Length: 379
Image (cartoon, rainbow, N blue to C red; front, side):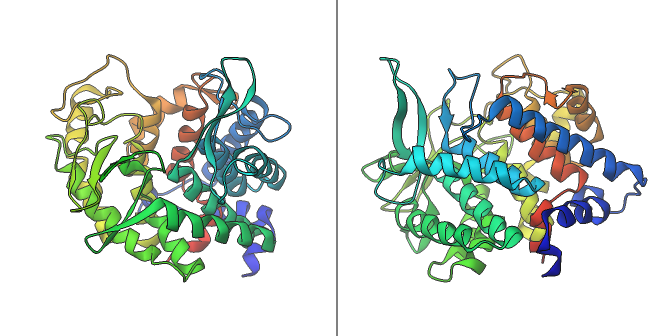
């Protein structure tokens, strides 16, 4: 496609003409997309300065300066999204050199790197986290399409091959995404619903014909519908359990059953699938599972950061990360204004929270209709 010839062309094209599902039927002034572009570019530049070392290591300042596979993958996805190849290559190469080479015998990434009790920097846990590897694979596929460099495609194929083999399991005729390679005890595996990304599996299916990635799309919606049924609120849990003998999905611990800092990502991932591929199950799931949230917001104009399955607030504070993902799905301008009020000179609220900076950016990008190279995947 000619539009892929330069990331700059993609950037301007999407901002001037791309509208997300949130904006359908709404008018938009000529200056609005340009203002959104300015904020997203400014915040990305601030993120590079604050959170990414010169060698490409993404630092979590709120967690003793550790680095994670998730952080590297988020940076790669944002870099290709915004058209920053230099940052993409640096963060990718750091992950290859420090989270994989000489550490794992496959192409997946150890999830945690930091300083140990002796003061030495290095791998703290070599288990992989499947959400990071699938986000990295998606970023690599997009980089291949945008920058036309086959090395990105080759790396993506290697990651997907090992992710399929080590990170998925077939149970009772259905394929499930495991959270990693250290979260199963005999036949019981902890599963993270917010890792399930049906839009990514559609992209993988078109890229890698050796594995049935399309089957994971169906699993995603069936699992989410089951998990939301565990709570009176209809909200998904942070973690659930899969019995690999029977295929039964059950609630995990009381703490894991809450809707909080993991689970909110479900709504962003399903919104992206709805926007890119017009999936009717996405529309139905979002409509049904957000009834309680909608009523709660209408009454209080705020949401607790951790919500029990019964709908009780488990903390007294809110979560801008949560609002970032909900605002677009709910077409909620008031949520967007709360996020805007927390923004200053490229940073949202807590300058040390890499997690907030990422999800505020991802949520804002979809809210304003900037899908970057993902726009080219729309059905």
